[in-house]
Each structure stands twice: as structure tokens, then as C-alpha cells.
Image (cartoon, rainbow, N blue to C red; front, side, top):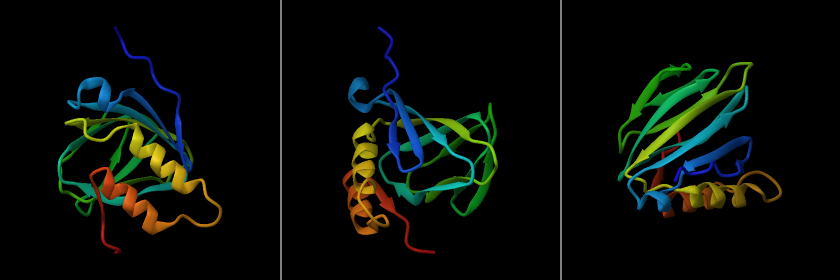
Length: 146
């Protein structure tokens, strides 16, 4: 039976919709879409030791920084992000962008995005320490400040 797309998880300005959550695949894969608004930079640069990430451009242009190099991901293009490589993304354009992400093995699920959304829901600026704690708890390593 096909999975239905979950309701979006609002993580700050980012919207994330899961097609296959980690628990639905027995941990073999996670598949989700990210809507990245125009002129947005997110998330905090990070790496993950235990899973790889492949992204596929759907709409607009998302700029990925992977291992220090910058790549514009256009609709129809794919980019592989290996484990242990620092990466992040932004949308510096005037048009919203959207991409599909595949995490393998599926060690990162919707719980991560919900936990970050909870931290960001507080008043005032984001609590960087709490976000770092959430990232580490879900297998992500925040990049050292540039």
C-alpha cells in the first residue's frame, strides 16, 4: 500500500513533508520534501556520520554547500551528500524552491524536524545550544562556527 504524504512540519520558514518516514521503512530509508522560501538560508551547516543524503531538485534553485564547494541544484538534478561531509543549503533567489531528500539508511525521521520546530517555536532568537542538542540526539553534528 502506498504511503500518504504527511502534513508539513513547519521548521521556522522551512516546510518538510515526509513521503516515507524512518519507522515506515524499518530504518532502511527516509524520503521527504523540503520547501525552501525565497531568500532563505537554512539549516545550520552540519554533517552526519551514519547516513548518506541524496537530494533531487523539484522546483526553483537550492544552493547546497557541500564540503566547502557550492552547487546550485536545479529541477531535475540530483546531488549526493556523503556521510561525514559538512553541508547546508540556502535559497538566495526570488522564487521558492523545493527538493526531495533521500536519507540512507533511514536513521533520520520526522521526529528530528518536530524537535527542532519545538525549539524554534519559543520567543526570541533561536536557542543555538538547544538546537545543537537536538541535532546530536538525532545523529547530526553541527559544524564548527566559520
